[in-house]
Amino acid sequence: MTNTKSLKLGAIGLGIMGAPMAEFLMNAGHPMTVWARTPEKAEFILNQGAAWAQTPAALAAEVDVLFLNVSDSADVEQIVTDENGILAGAHAGLIVIDNSTISARTTRDMAKLLAAKGAHWADAPVSGGQKGAQTASLTIMVGAEPAVYDRIEPLLHHIGKTLTHVGDVGAGQIAKACNQIVVSGTLAAIAEALVLAEGAGVDPARVREALLGGSAHSRMLEIHGARMLNGEYAPGFKAKLHQKDLGIVQQTAQELGLALPGTSLAGQWMNALVGAGMGELDSSALIEVLRRLNGQTSQAD
Ligand code: NAP
Image 1 (spheres, rainbow, N blue to C red):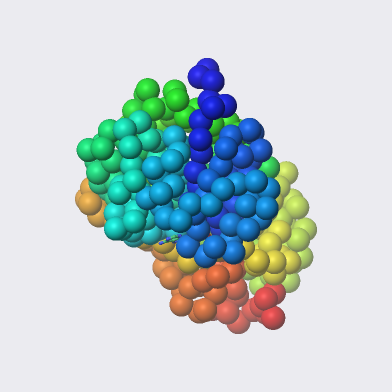
Image 2 (cartoon, protein in one colour):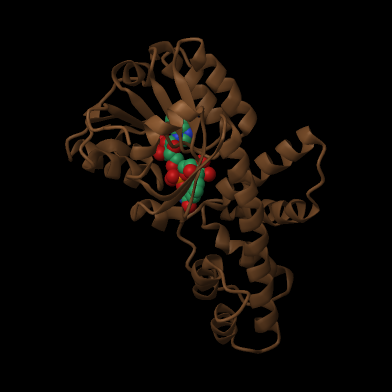
């Protein structure tokens, strides 16, 4: 394993996921410099000794490895290609690790731009949610050249428990799209199961308890099932980001000429959830759309 202690790290995107991840990386003993669009979001880590960079370009110029954790493909593209973006400051040997969930296409485009400056890209989207980020136990799906993966693997161990080098650049984002297919289908199935229990006049909490002991057990039934029962919709994973992810899945499927009918349906649920004004809530609020459709009592009121 490479000794990485001397590497200077940077971080952009200090939201629900990025904030704890940057903190773990700094607490592992690395010098940390950050930039944030909303500077107040950086206060917690500046107070612990991180340095501030004026622009993404300045940050890219001074660090060895730069972690990104922003929302969507367009955000990553903007941070890379803006006049004062990462590309303007990139140097030979710089590695950008993108923990955001974005499209494989944008990922490969960004990697090409950086390669022209001798810099490298690794897509490293994560699964495990806010809890996984806060406990450094994320699942990380990595797309990178093998030599780049070997270099960053020790760093990723500071934020994740299960690392998989899926393939070359872009492969991590494809794996994450696959993850979101499973997650969205499971979420919709859990919502339907609880709505059926409620509609039948059977205690949905007891039903969830029973299901957790059998083949229907899943971490999502544990965590998101509990949120649905208790109406606890503080994010978590914002519904608008879940909707964005299903857009990425469909766009990728369309480019490849693939039909994913089940995921289309899950995407429609997510559209309805965001359309109903619940985009900032955790995506487990999906059950509220189903409750409304069926004339059942909301847990959010
Ligand atoms: P979040 O709390 O909304 O944080 C996103 C951060 O990115 C914010 O601090 C935001 O800055 C910054 N940002 C977004 N667009 C930007 C831009 N164009 N320029 C500069 N900064 C920008 O979201 P999150 O939940 O941490 O999610 C981050 C990524 O991880 C997303 O791609 C998401 O799909 C993925 N993810 C999330 C979870 C989860 O459970 N939350 C799980 C797995 C993967 P401002 O503060 O200025 O708005």
